Image (tube, rainbow, N blue to C red; front, side, top):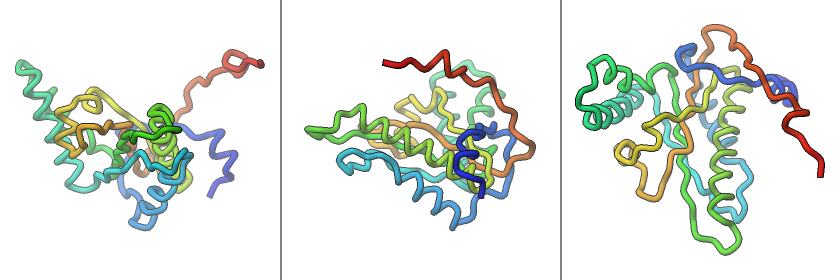
Length: 187
């Protein structure tokens, strides 16, 4: 396993189309999900949950996305519908991070939503530490209520993101990062 600081300094997203199998083993998936649940969580509310898409479940989720897309875009060419159908099929594992808030006198919804974001980032970091490529994505379908309903989310739940995880097919290229002097101020 890489040194934690070096891992955090060099972590980068890998495009799902640049991933292949194998994906994480059952034990590795349990580790990834355990780390995903080990995040700052004011009030111990656990305002998130996970949906695991692997195997045929990825294609079934793609069917949900494609059907909603086709219904809302009746003139869409078959090739566009096919693209939507394959949204979750590049990587062998996709983890949906579902966010919801609970009424609490000391923990505002914003903090709870940030906890879900921290959970998604922990999943990405854990997968990367295990040697997999990982990418946190959304897309139109992550904000479409009909798709969310079709994926089993409750009316008060949102999709914080879909984490695609798989074996890299090539080294991931880094992108330009912000210069600290441009983003850091002192009070």
